[in-house]
Amino acid sequence: MNKHFFSDMSVMLGRSMRHIFRSMDTIITVTIMPIAEMLLFVYVFGGAIHTGTDNYVNYLLPGILLIAIASGIAYTSYRLFIDVQGGIFERFHSMPIVRSTVLWGHVLTSLVSNAISILVIILVALIMGFRSSAGVLSWLAVIGILALYTLALTWIAAIAGLSAKSVDGAGAFAYPLLFLPFISSAFVPTKSMPTVVRVFAENQPVTSIVDAIRSLLAERPVGNDIWIALAWCVGIMLAAYVFAMRAYKKRA
Image (cartoon, rainbow, N blue to C red; front, side, top):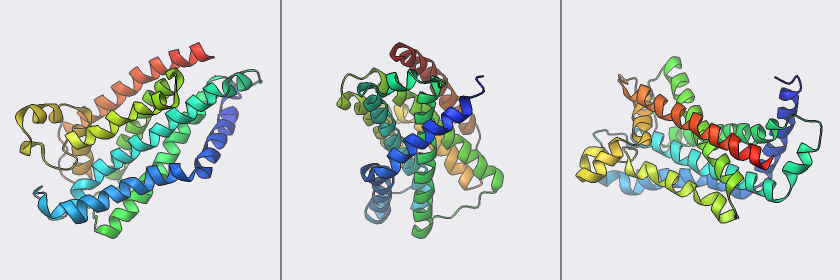
């Protein structure tokens, strides 16, 4: 590894983070909107939704966190697209820096910004009555799953940002990712769904990830959910990484 990799990457990370903090619409979309959805489902729909628990916010929170991550990575795709179209990549590549750090700066920014968003959402959930009996190891497992999920979606975002022909195209990929939690166990148990919908819901990545996080936070046996969740996250991340690097090399 080039000895300047980490110093170059820290510069690129700082550049991308400044863009985040200067963009209020990013902060509002990534943090405020998931909080608004959580308030809506808990205080408007919560009384009519039967999940077998008296504390709906405990049931709901994992899905809200995944929605927040999906919202956040849409901006990664957008910022990458803007850099590509604005010729910033070519300027950086003409400088004596490690080329891959330009892309890694965006990826790590996604990880950091989504971590901040998740922290804020959990704090609001605590105010709303969220409680967890999870120990340190369980919380570390939750953090690990969320980090892997963020990286998996971020590399998908990188493919879209590097390959899109328009701003709309760069952001459009995020819509299915935002929609997936609604067809999962994130808001209601899958057993209440029609057969065809239930089969899809029980065999898509969000359900296993949500169920694993929910069990960890409640200190319940996780079973196979955690391994299925990890397999989905790692599998998607590795596949997306390979295609993202191919797209990046074409741009570079």
